Length: 112
Length: 113
Image 1 (cartoon, rainbow over the protein chains, first blue to last red):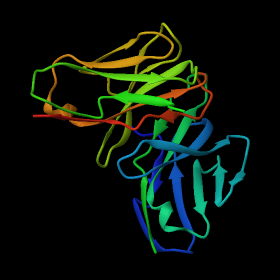
Image 2 (cartoon, rainbow over the protein chains, first blue to last red):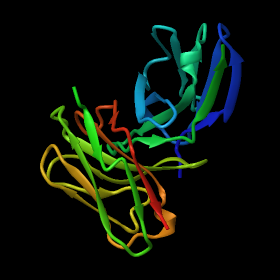
Image 3 (spheres, each protein chain N blue to C red):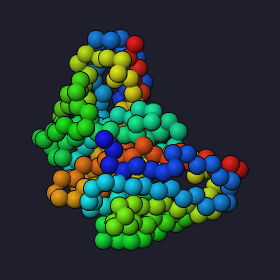
């Protein structure tokens, strides 16, 4: 079963708008990662946030982590058509056994 | 700059046939993984190899076997393919077990008739 679950399942916005997607998980984690998957391609790592971090930035990406609520959000600012892709969160469990577990993903469409 | 290479990219099998998906990485990574991706199900872990010489079952191992041939290569074998194994298979690697970032191949699209 998936550890992380993304919300919403699908998101459609106009170029220039911000896109926010969320990830909820069930058990304690040592880190949470976000990946992007373009249609027909493999997944590409975007950003990793550790359990002791609350916020992290990378270019137009901003990730937050709230361990008390067991949730994370990915914000893409000033979206571009090239951001059209599926986005997945992956959690690494704490307790010594790290198995990367993925959610079902959010499908983002950015209209030019 | 190949990264993770999977072969074949596409394959059609008949029920009961066997085949092996090959995966190789050139990044000197210790850990390797096989996932399958089905519509609406996200990625599910089939098997993983935390380091050379070790393999372990993931979430959905039934019907599959793996071999960590050496540090570079990790193969996935379907002994008797079933239609339920129609999926896109992804191989991934990471520098160390628990190191975080996974590097993925481009996927192998398998159809079992």
